[in-house]
Every structure is written in structure tokens, then in C-alpha cells.
Image (cartoon, rainbow, N blue to C red; front, side, top):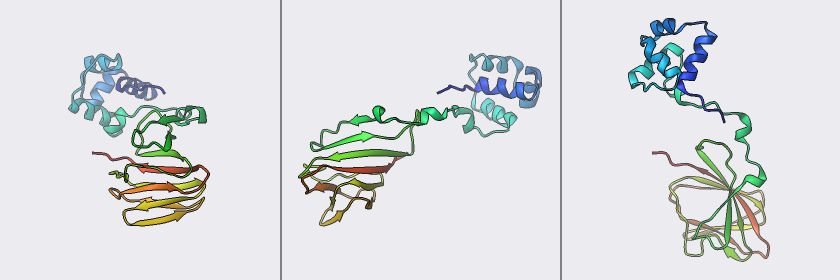
Length: 186
């Protein structure tokens, strides 16, 4: 991943538009000294200066902080999948599949559930996120408080936030379940 700083964005913009520091300073209303400092990575701009820079660049304020991300960094290879340890899950192993150097708004997890077991032996799981479970391999039973649904390979179930649930594997073979979870943002 390449780190793109605000000063680099200013310098690139000036080069693309054949502007001197003085011309950019006039366009943005910022002193030439501060622009020079920012381009060298030593300035500390205020919010008003950042707004002026965004305006002069013809972009939004948040885009000043977005880093250039190369597409190759958005791939997570099978060998790079991170095993997640959850002390409440004795029978299930989770693997984080979400690629990328930046936090995502969604999380992709693969769960492997042992035969004749359940995902949360101590009770039900409950999250503040919404999630979708897709049965990749095997047959599972999704248990909610007071209700159970048998899910076959290829079936999908949506689990609403705060809904208590767990998966049961009543078969003699392990099952694979793909979870897609939204991320809570405050």
C-alpha cells in the first residue's frame, strides 16, 4: 500500500496543472511558506487550511485523507487467512477472510463446526451487527430462542442484530458456514 500524504497530493496537483507554489497559494488563500511545509511533510494544517486545500484541489475534505490503495493489497490468499480464537467457541474454528489493508464495513468469516456439536456450547450468541450465514458444506440447524431451522448446503439465513442464535451440527461430518457481518460504526 502506498501512503499518500496531503503534501504529496498538493505537489502532484501543482505538477499536473503546471502551478508554482505561489500560484497554488493564491488559488487556495494559504501562505507559500505553509504550502512548502506541507509538501515537505512538516506542516500541521488547521481545519480551515484543510478545507481551503480541498477546495483548491477541487475535491472533498475527506478525500484528502484517503490513501491510494493498490488492488493487489485487496486480495487475501488462502494461506493468509487468519484463524480467530474465541474462548466461548470450543467446537467451532473461524477464519477471517476479509481482505484489505483498511477496515471494511463488512466482515467475511468462514466457520468450521465439528460433528455432533454446536457453535456456542454455553448458550446463545448475540451481536449488535447484522449477519448472513451461508451453508457452504453440510447440513446445519440454526437455533434461535424457541425456534430451529434446518439449513442445507447452499441455504442462506439472515440473522438480525441482537437476535440470540447458535448453529448446531447434528451430523457425523464437519460443516462449513460462511458468515457475512456488518460492522457497527459509532
